[in-house]
Amino acid sequence: MAPGCSSGGSGDKLIKVLILSGSNNHDWEKTTPFLEKILTGSGLFSVEVTEKPDTLTLSGLVNTDVIVSNWNSWPDNGLRWPEPAEKALLHFIQSGGGFVTFHASTSAFYNWPEFKEISTASWIMDSTWHGKRGGTRVTVENNRHPVTRGMSGFFIYDELWVNARENENFEVLGSATNEGITARGIKNQPAVFAAGYGKGKIFNTILGHDVRAMQNTGFKTLILRGTEWAATGKVTQTLPHEFQENRNTAQRLSWQRTDTTFALLNGKNLLWQYNFNTIYGRPFFHPVYAGNNNITCHSPDDHPWHLGQWFCWKYINRVNYWEYLNRPYDSDGITEIKSIEIIPRPDFSAEIKLKIVYHPTGGENVLSEFRRIQVSPPQGNGDIFMDYQFDFDAIDDTVILDRTPIEEEPGGKSWGGYAGLSIRFNQDFMKPHFISSWNDNEKHQRSHRKLALYGI
Image (cartoon, helix red, strand yellow):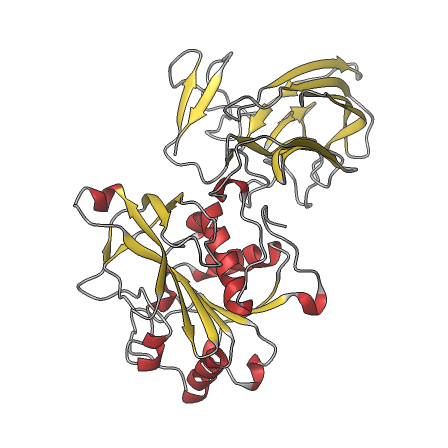
């Protein structure tokens, strides 16, 4: 389940979504599966996808609550669907169905007058333009609407359209700007919209150019809340911690523990969570909040073995303990927790003690470890400190700890030469800057006592 989302239950309680796909001047073959993952991962929606939206029928939409379009025919803007499909879409919305569009999916049907009534922010030839993709600030203009109620603004790495078509029937919920248009003296561009059409509800955002933009927590929050609102007229999801505009600064700290997690909460919000004995094969922290910002990313699609903030060897006796190889969440080398002791303290610091053994799949133990992690209480500015102690003992006669050779070494590569204590930073980070104890850029070549990261 995505952070900040409440479960929609199961079976008939799920909101039924139909995604329109199969054509787009953007990379729909990647963005449609990712869109489906966002929706299903929330626990609120069941999703079907059609790559032939021109075959829509009234009877085929009977069990659909909301249509999410990732379809356009650009540059064939004069293309029309067969009349039954067009009528089915309009009747669906007028009768109370939801309709959600994002980025380029409104750039279609330029010769279909009714589509202009149910869409906004399309690309206008010789008028609309965009600069380079980059850091874009999104501002909430209406924090009373169910989609954006109580929501603060955010940054996203995206493509910002300027002078897109405006439909005055749509209410602007949010706007966006970046350095490129600010330097030209251009005002914020409308970026998040909502409207009604008959009994139906329509949500649109110009955000979401590609998978990188869609990975942003702000985009995911908007698309999830906008889809639920379009389908039901209300939003039941809890806003992610970082977007809660009216935060109570008073701390209400408490511990929360399950069979596989141990966490510190402030009210209902997680400050940090330690995960162990899970399907991911090794213990890790995620999420970890610094102030109001989640700094960790968990198991991204490109590197699913990157587990927030975690420790792992790369090779032990030439066996790979780092990547998942051919099997989901399973490595050739096993990191096995033999015991774990968690000591929460009254000042809301904590101590975590683990006994761990390492062995090949189906093989004998080769290395043992005692790990001690001390986590400080939250500081006044929300910061926390984690102190790690590792003690390793060889069990096998020979234990070789190694990593992928780097470029200067025989068989070296420009990637993958790492192991040890690691962090996968939240994908929302942009313009990162590192400050090391050496005050230089040799992050991969030298050891450091301290390493700090900051950015927007």
